[in-house]
Image (cartoon, rainbow, N blue to C red; front, side):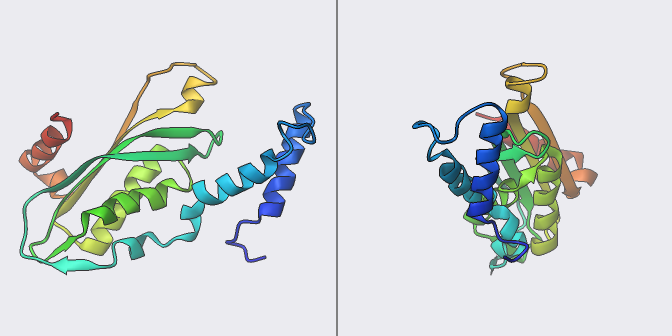
Length: 191
C-alpha cells in the first residue's frame, strides 16, 4: 500500500481494537458495522491529506481589478490533531488582487476544505490558507480569520461550551496598511 493511501481494512482493525480496549464488544448489534462506518468517514474527513492545495487555486482569471475581495462565513470543520475531536465554525478570506489576476470565489472555499480535511490545529490552518493565496495568486495582500468552537474544550478538559477561538493571518498590505486591514475586518463583522 502506498504511504499516502488510507487503508479501510487497517482503520477497521484499529477501531475494533479501540472498542475492545474500552470494554465494548465490537460484535454486538449496534457496533457491528461501526468500524466500516468510521473507516468511510475517515477517508472523507482526512481526504485533504492527499490533495494539492495549490492546484485548487491553479486556474486564475486575468482581470484588471485591484479592490478588496472578501468571502465571509465559509463553513469550516476539521479534526484537532491533539485529540482527534472536531472543531467547527467559519472562515473569512480577504485578498487584494494585484490588478492582473483574480480567482473564482468557490476556489477559496475549496482551499479551506482541503486544508481543513487534515488533522489540524486552527493556527496552522489559518496560516496555510493565507500562505497559499499569497504564493499562487501573488496578490497585494491576504487576510484569513477563522472563528471556531473546539469539541476538545466542550467535551473534555475545561468543558466550556460556546467558547470560540479566533485566529488571524495577515499578509502583505494587510500588515502594512491599517486602513486596508480595518476595511476588511469591518466588512467581516458587518451583518
